[in-house]
Image (cartoon, rainbow, N blue to C red; front, side, top):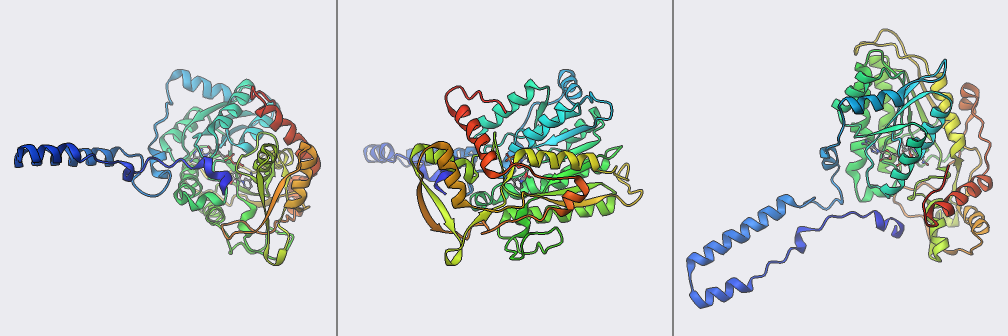
Length: 435
Ligand SMILES: NC(=O)c1ccc[n+]([C@@H]2O[C@H](COP(=O)([O-])OP(=O)(O)OC[C@H]3O[C@@H](n4cnc5c(N)ncnc54)[C@H](O)[C@@H]3O)[C@@H](O)[C@H]2O)c1
């Protein structure tokens, strides 16, 4: 958890405000004036009220998600619309026009760049929240901008903005990757999961359902929906009713919500269950990323073990393989069948595991990193805390193989080598690494 300390953006607490009583006690002694006491009492009361109402948060949560939705973003106007249109313009013969939410995120950046490379129209949307270092999101934005992808700054909960985007561009597809990721952050900010993974998803689906034509939607669920499943490898038909974290619960609820919109409104929906995605431009809250940082700094890294000294292992999946799975899902997505909010017939509904099918113990991940970084890690073996992490993930990818032609090709050793090369280049001075 210490690695997440930098994410703690707790506002100053009202309790830290100290009133200095001495001046008025002094005066009281000297003048004994009841009128002055009343006057100063009002001043203090006023100050307390002003402080209370201007304080960024009066509860114990570090950032109240409802306040995030109150953030105002600049959008609209002819120049803005021109940028939106130009970014979403299709440049290949059978290309599609895709709205990518969470485009400044790890997966969103890679998917947007890959779509743009092959001539599809791409418009990004992201709120650039501070769950992890926003400067990394800005660097990804700059990277995308260079390849002609514009990221609109806004929240998926903003229906006016989403409706405007659909008014300006008739998106054929939505790649929905905006979400509150990570399992441990739920201890600090549970509301952010509801805000982005539930309310935001519903808002996005509402706008898509009302769009004419309706787009086909591919969206990121998570392998965490398998929770404490013990039957491995995890298949799409396995039970998903034992979530181990609030994150998993909101992803599971998201799947139910998506099914509902498919059933009632004829939206074409494909849910992708990603398994521990890693690679260049990755997420600083993930173990492979902060292990690299801490090994290089000579800091001790916690390595968890399951009950009875069991191994904690992950089905690490390289970002390029995930991108191929996302693009294949978009390419094979059928059209939505509704229009103007009305269903006209049954629509496609799919869910796929996108994993690597070879779980690797986390201790092996550390050994590979040691070799690549040429630094010995200081390991601290600890019991897996009950804070949302599951001991094991392992994907059965036969559905994706059959229907998407999905076939992961990068093993952990090769993928980590590419990550480390990026990491060292990005963080050594100029932060000018390329993908
Ligand atoms: N990376 C993984 O290992 C992994 C594994 C399983 C599932 N997933 C899922 O894949 C998706 C992408 O994950 P990622 O690793 O790229 O995460 P990420 O945090 O890097 O990207 C998510 C992006 O969404 C944005 N965002 C969050 N809430 C938003 C809102 N309300 N409005 C607009 N933008 C918002 C964030 O600013 C961020 O840039 C997520 O749905 C995540 O849950 C990722």
